[in-house]
Length: 66
Figure 1 (cartoon, rainbow, N blue to C red):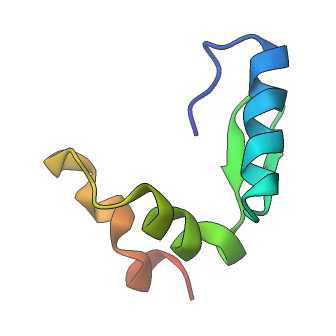
Figure 2 (cartoon, one colour):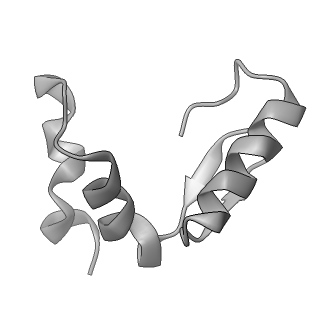
């Protein structure tokens, strides 16, 4: 997740919320939240269908997650 524009306190807040929902994730050096491959399918199901056509390929987890 592109969270670089947020302060670190808010990034940790979001990570805590994601962990409580059961998603495996961590914070990278540049303050991005990385969702583990093990949680990708569940996370995409949780947030629902892609709202932007140009990003629909990111929802095609058959190609990106094995």
